[in-house]
Amino acid sequence: MTPSLPSSTEFLLPPGLGDLHQKTLTWESNIELWKRELTFFQKLIAEYGTQLQLRDHIKEREHFKMLLNYYKNQLMNTYSGKMIRHEEKLKSLMSDGMRQEESKYRDEHHELERQINTFEKELQCFKHELYLLIEKVLLRNKLKKS
Image (cartoon, rainbow, N blue to C red; front, side):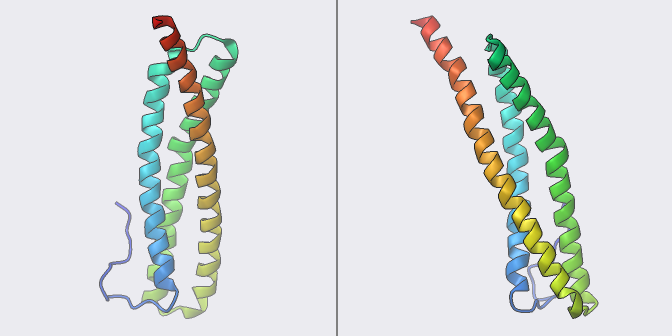
């Protein structure tokens, strides 16, 4: 479980930091959802990918499997770790009264936001391309039954 700041008034966050904290919590939730989606995509490829017979489709399937492995086993863990460290910095910042470090925290937050937004766009493209590949299998199966 990700250590995060309590939602109580134990820590009174300066203006704007509360919003950044809420964004981080949203990102943590998104990461968990992405992990589940990636597991689903792995199952989808396992079920339908074996029915791909054209060399280009097989290469595409292997490319998707490699990306899924990277996303799920490396990138999501990296992002989860970054979120944990980011929340720990905020907690430390508030408990130690280190207001001068707030600027560094905000800069780090904006960089995390850029990374998360970039991945989210990449994931959308990935899903679109994967669905197209699976549709090829479904269409082929439909044509066989006709």
